[in-house]
Image (cartoon, rainbow, N blue to C red):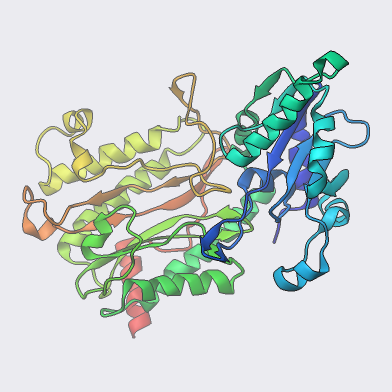
Length: 440
């Protein structure tokens, strides 16, 4: 499964239709990053660059020139080099950029100083995101300044720079049918990994051993990497929101909170499940879990085009606060406790975020100061939680050190929403039944 060439062409065309006449858009590829000494991190393309091209290589620059007679999509990239390809793998080269990635023109990246200034000259407006790549910022400004120095000879430098992300990120917020299919597949792979983990976990395993079950399931289904560092927190480690050490043993009687999702063809999935290491929830664990699940189901219920972005969060907060009062962890009127944010002792994060090419995907949450209306094609997470710190002596000892989060990926549809990650169980009875069967 992959995004089609026609889809990339459609995206470029849609972007260029929004650009002002006689303008140019410039996007550099992500640079390679050194991990340590002469070892590099696995290469991952910049999300904006990938969204418009599908081109997977570093040392590349994409240029879009609406209305250019000789072609609107120009790509600078590395030349073919047999010696380098023997060591580091095949390159598309300028010829491959045209044949396989639909570039109208393609040039060696080493010729960019000679060619790109001529493409910039005479254009009124440059669409480019300043501040993301300092080295390329300086290179681009050197080209523009060189044009400015020739004004007396008739050269015409651009008069305006505009953030490309202003147009591009709003496009990325709305997922096409192909993107939705890709994200369903990523969600299904990740759901299978969570099921595998529930079946595999045993007291005495280490957190990293449970993490390995996820990575195995991701890779064997074609997802070569997680979308983000996996969180595998047993016991009180589940109360650390971004716990990634994953080094402690998993203990009988504890819960384990796992926030893990694969990346497939650059598209992220993001699932959290919390389940008992022994296979059975204690009374206190189940009581808190049921509150979180009730809050998540309520938030998903109101995730549809009739409501704005913050509505699911507001609904989750209301249900969580009422549940905390019923269990005695908070005292007072639930509405007043919501107003004063007393719940933040136990629930200190938002209920979701946009999801797409980035796990915390692009797109405005507010427009004109108001929460953005949900619309079909948007994908978001719904992930309420409760976290009782292990040293919180204001609550009974039986509640301390319990951390719970339940997270699903949700696609907004014309008449409601679709839970993309529905294949992994989340009701207490379903989780315990799955784990019991695996131990039979």
